[in-house]
Image (cartoon, helix red, strand yellow):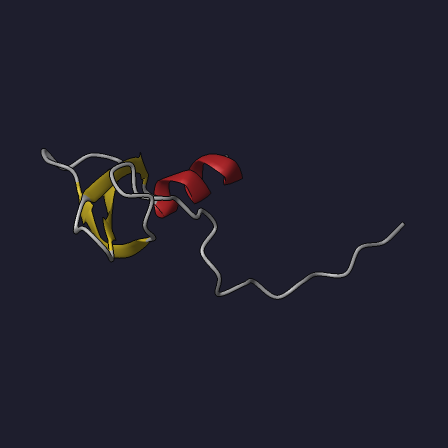
Length: 69
């Protein structure tokens, strides 16, 4: 069976509740880690109480290069 290519969604790929008040976490920023490495910190903050959650992931460019190799 042939699958058609779907357009990428503008919805978040991960919906996380706040660990403090169970409010909604919204994306704030992406910053590279120090010293310069292949990692990025994705910061999400709660709309209700302001709690921040930092998720560290591999940079997209690095992940793409690795997948192509």
